Every structure is written in structure tokens, then in C-alpha cells.
Image (cartoon, rainbow, N blue to C red):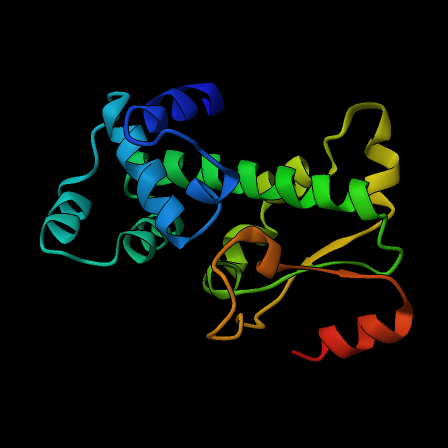
Length: 171
């Protein structure tokens, strides 16, 4: 699926970074990819999107309700990519206090982030899986600052010590 999404995005962009998928606009990109790959959205979702609705919000809501296969597939890909990228960050910096996942997309999708796909992808690092899982990931409702970039780097907060953990867990 991820390679298919990359090929889809390369039709429109010379360069494709993770932010084209792991962001609010990325959910819209993934939704278009899922439709392009042949999964038909529910009539209700198609109407809401056609009326100019907020695609990430529509897709997230219908995923939680469970009434649209396009929305479910979109969010499954999104959560897998987001979790994998957060796990990559944990491997790079080894935050002993954990990784707090915050920002607009995280705050609006807490229930979905706490389900299996995100957490499974976060810890799925082959022979280094145990190391990453020892640095827990915690989705939280702390939105990003308005001036912050929408990129993943602003949404994932590595925490190195227990004193930092207390600072972020109160959000």
C-alpha cells in the first residue's frame, strides 16, 4: 500500500516526503489514493466531500462510525505510516521518557491513535522492536502551536527524563 501511495503521489509531485501522508492534508492525499485504487466511498462520505467538507475530519469521523470502507482504509494507512514514523524517531533519539504524540491531527484522532494500528507500527522495528517498545508512545490532546509546522516533527515530542514526562502528560 505504501509503495502504491508513493507512486500515486509521484504523479503530482517531483518529490514526496512523509508529510504528504502524515499530516491533516496527508489524510486527504491518502483518501484520494484509496479512491484511485478502486475502493468506493460510502454515499454519505462522497456527498460530504463533494460539498467541500473537511476531508480529514470526515474520514476520521466515518472511520470511528465504521460506515465507509474508503475512510477505514485511508485511516489504516495513515495510522500505520504515522506510527512507523514515530517509531523511527524513537529509534533515532532513544527517548527514555517516551514519545508524546501531539498536534492537531493527534488531538483530533486520539481514539484512533490509541487503537492497534498506530501502536503496532510504532513498535514494529524488527530486531530493534524491544528497544523501541521500551520507550513508550503516548498520544495526547496537546495541540500544536499555531506557528508550528504541520510536519510530523512538530507533532512528536521526544521526552528524555521523567521530569519532562510530567510536563507533557498534564496536557
